[in-house]
Image (cartoon, rainbow, N blue to C red; front, top):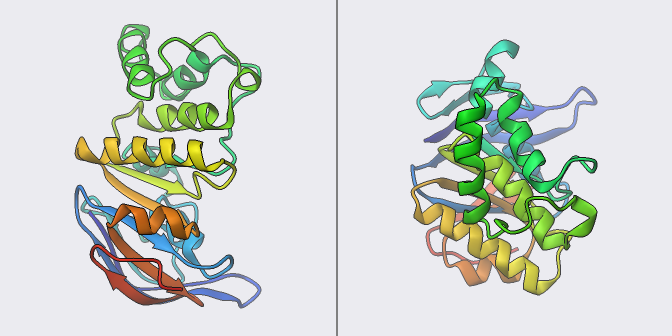
Length: 226
C-alpha cells in the first residue's frame, strides 16, 4: 500500500529531516508514526500525500510510483488519500454539510451523488443532526469529526491523520481515535502521526518511532518508546 525505498528528504536550507527511510505499510493496517517535534514524522506524512517530494529514493502508494508525480496528477492521488490535520482547516462561513459537500463539488461530483454520499458520511462520524451548524457552533471534537468526514467523501484507501488530537482534550481525543479505529475496521489503511504517548500505548497497533529523521524502531503491537 505505502512503500518507501531509501527515501531521503533534504530542504533547501540543507537540513535533512528524513534519512534513507525504508518502510512498508500494508493495506488495512493501522500504523502510528511517533517522535518528538521536528524529528521528521510530519515530513513522512507529507511525502505520502505528495505535498513534499523526496530528494532521493522511491515512494509507491497503492501501486503508483509517486516519486516524481506531476502536479496535474496530485488531485487524483488525493482522492485515494484522505488527510486530517491538527487545526481542522474548515471553511468558517460554510455549514457542516457545506464543508463536506465542498470537497466533492471541487472535483465536479454530480448533485445526485453528493446528496447520497454526504448524509451517509455525516452519520458515520455522528454528525447527522448537526449538518446546518457552522464550525464556531461546534466543539473542537465535533470540528475534527467534520474534517474527518470531509476526508472520507472520496472513499479513500488511506487516511493520513497528522496530530488529529493535538488541539483536543482527553475525552474528545478518545472519540477521534475511536472513529479512526472504526474507519480502519471498514478496511481503510490509517496512518496516525502523533506525539501523544497515551494514545499510542492504548492502541496496541504497529508503532514506527522516528528520531532525527531515522526509523529507530518498528514494532507490531508496539509502544511509544521515546
